[in-house]
Amino acid sequence: MPYQRRLLPSTSMMAAFDAAARTGSFTDAGRELNLTQGAISRQVSALENQLDVILFNRVRNTIQLTNAGKIYAREIHAALQAIRKASLNAMTDPMIATLNLAILPTFGTRWLMPRFPLFLKENPDITVNFVSKLSPFDFQSEDLHAAIHYGSPDWPGTNSSFLMSEKSVPVCSPEFLSLNPLENTGALTQMPLLHLATRPDAWKNWFDSNGLELPRAQGMLFEQISIIAQAAVGGLGVALLPKFLIQSELDRGELVIIVDKPLQSDAGYHLITPVDKSDYAPIAAFRKWILKMAAQQTIGD
Image (cartoon, rainbow, N blue to C red; front, side, top):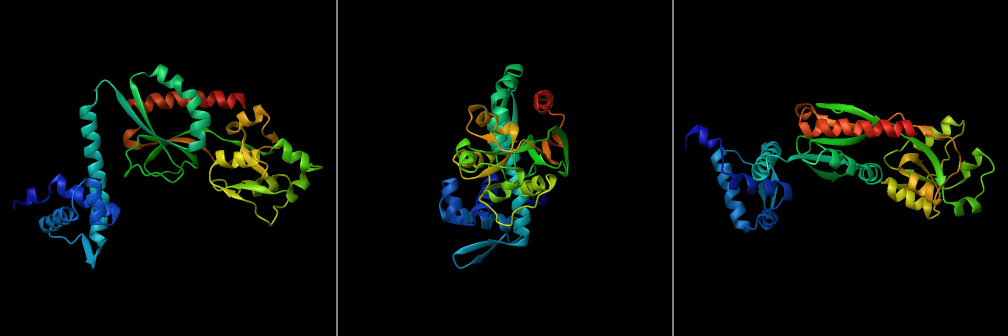
């Protein structure tokens, strides 16, 4: 086989290998690709023979990626993603641009979505696809053009646009407060505190800023702001939450600010874009729009 051709395996081989690497099973890979287990095994074996590299160790009825296989799997997955994207773009109306955006669940539903019709009205030719996630995202392995990130803007290989910081306030339900009247700020140390996993030091920082010591007893832990907000509404304790993300509960009287001493966060919300995609027209349009919306939010705080 000519050397150059040897370096270009068929897409069927690469797809079979990619599915097997992701699922860890020829059977599951076959199910995903609507092929038999034997067909997947043959495609992977043919790929190994063509490259003259062992990609999987076969142990009884299990498979495990070799070191070479792990490296190849990452690169092949990215290559197949690029091929799928190119094919989709070729099949799509060239006059319609696409923006794939990763958003934080609560920020997305409570702040971004109510404003987003304005963006679509100003940019009718841009189709936006959303990915909602709390876990870290990877621009190299995921087909994302941009992401809204909370934290520090220290993301390698990206450009960052600061959107806003957040001010968190201690809140609880009116019913909880009536059963646990707060005589002074120090009495808060005796109340059940609800903690947010993405803001692990929030309560400590709030108590420090008020000259108090964080209670040793830790309360319940929650992963999402929307869930911890509902826990506070349900009377489970006091939560320290970004005011702008719970404004609807405050307006409806479901939550009340128990101590009006906001905690200014050192972290912030940022629009993160890969350096090589920063000039992509849909990203530029979205960046301009969201910076305008964020400025209005800051003015209103």
